[in-house]
Image (cartoon, rainbow, N blue to C red; front, side):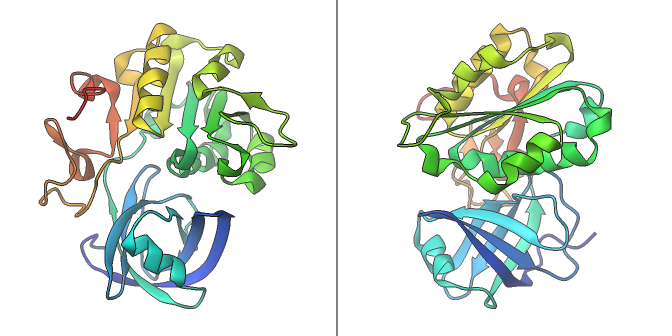
Length: 269
């Protein structure tokens, strides 16, 4: 196991444009540590700074990150091209504990960029498909252009993933579902005593998804959320990501609802 605090040199092997403000960066890194679905790395753009980004694939030959253009570091990252170098350290944080739920049905829910966190879970499950029950993947976006990884949908379905998509605002040519992601639950058959829910997306989406799963009978301990808010240092020293009695970068970003129930959904916390 490598040291996650040591900055490594990463070659940008490939850049894939997902939409006008989202790109995948596939990095070649020698001797990078093992990681699990839901963990994140710190990406360092030389002479600019670093930013926490989720690992968005379980592939080991290249380390994949899906990045949205939202600030100065990502602006400089988007100026780089294949063949350039950045720094990387990690992996950090807790993970989606899929290994605990062999034999169970799994409901994955993603909103917008949150699919970047859920995608490694999908890949993990496909690799071990025979030891899990039904796997539902519910994906929502503001509009069709906001749906990520469209080229992977066929492979996921062939791998036994029951994929459902919805958008808030349809565009010309869209023939799928329209509405918030929780409306897709009417197409999902659940056995609540043997089902686990895992999600990532805007907090308001996760709030209502959690309420829906509880109403359907899932226990608080079998609902997991990725709370990727305001992370900065990755080691819990700067206080930037304090969330009630936790630090998201150190104690999360993956939490069971049971653990954060008293503080989840509390405004301005």
